[in-house]
Length: 401
Image (cartoon, rainbow, N blue to C red; front, side):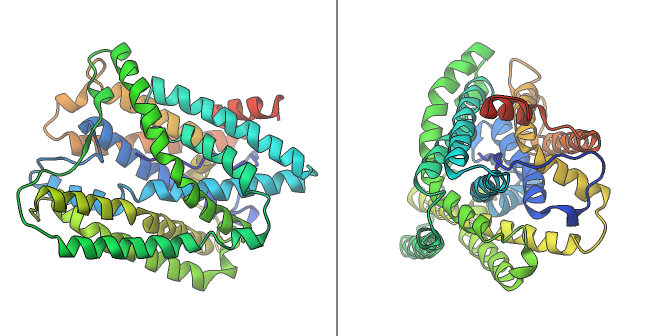
C-alpha cells in the first residue's frame, strides 16, 4: 500500500510556470509517483490482497507480477516517506523565510499534521484501510517535536540508517541462501477483507478493524522520513546541480540493491521459482526490507531528471505532472474513490466481470492517473489549489491563505 508525501506547500501561481522558477524535482517526483501508487493500490483493491499480485498467474500475468514486485510494490511507498520528510523541511523553511519564529513554525506543523491524522482516519475508515495519511500525521507530529529543529550534529546520524538497512539486507540474503528449500508454497500475500465486503456498511466495519493495525505498522517509517528531512536540509532535489555525483551513485546503488534483493520474490510471484513456505516468507521479508533502497534510488532519479529538464523550457507533460505533484493529496484521495467505485462488489465490481483482474486494474490505474494529471493541469492554469489542499490549509492556519 502506498501513499503520497502531502506536506509540501507549493506556491500556486496563475499561468504556466517554467521549471527554473521553482524547484522541479519534488513536485515532479510526487506527481509521477502517484502513478506508482495507482498501479499498486488498484492491484491490491482488485485482487483483495497485499501486495496486489495474481496468486495464480497465467501468461502475461506472470511477467507483470514479476515487474510489479521488482519495481512497484514496497518500492514506491518508501519514496513518499522520504518526500514527506523533505516536505516537512520545505514547509518549515518557507515559514521561517516569511518571518515566522521557531515557535510559530512548530505550531503550524503540529496543527497541520494533527489535521492530516484526522484526514487519515476519515480516509482509512470511509474509503481505503491501506491509508498512509494517518501514519504520516502521527510521524509528522513526533518528528516536529523531536527532530525538526535540531542542529546538523543530530541530523548527520540520519544517513546511517542506510548503513544499518544495508547490513540487514545482507544478513537476510545470507539467511535466505542458507535456508533455501524447493517446494510448492503459494505466493505469500495478506488478505484485504474490506474490499470483499458485500455492502458499503460492511466494508466500513472491516476498515474500522484494518486501519488502526495498518497505521501502527507504519510508524517505524519515521526513520525513512528522517532521511528525507536530512536530504531536504541539504536541498538535494531543489539544487541537483550541486549534488550530481551523489545523486548518480544513489540512483544506481539504491535501485540495484532493490532489484537484486527483490529478485527472489519477483521470480516466485511470476511462477518462475518454486519454494517451501519458510523460504517464501524469507523472500517476502527480503523484498520488503530492501524497498527503502528503491525509494532513495527513485528520489535520486527524479533529482537527475529535474536537472535535465530545467535546462530547457517546460513542456506540457512535465508541467502537468508537476501540477499533480503540487496537488498530491487531492490526487491520492481521488484514486481511493475510484477504486471503491470500480472494484467493490456492491458498486461496479469489475474484478468479478473480467478475465484478468490484475491487468484490468492496471488499465484503470493508468486511466485514473491520466485523468488526475489533466485535472491538475487545468487547476494549475487557473491558479487553483486542489480541494483537499485548500481544506487542509484552512484547518491548519485557521484562516484563508
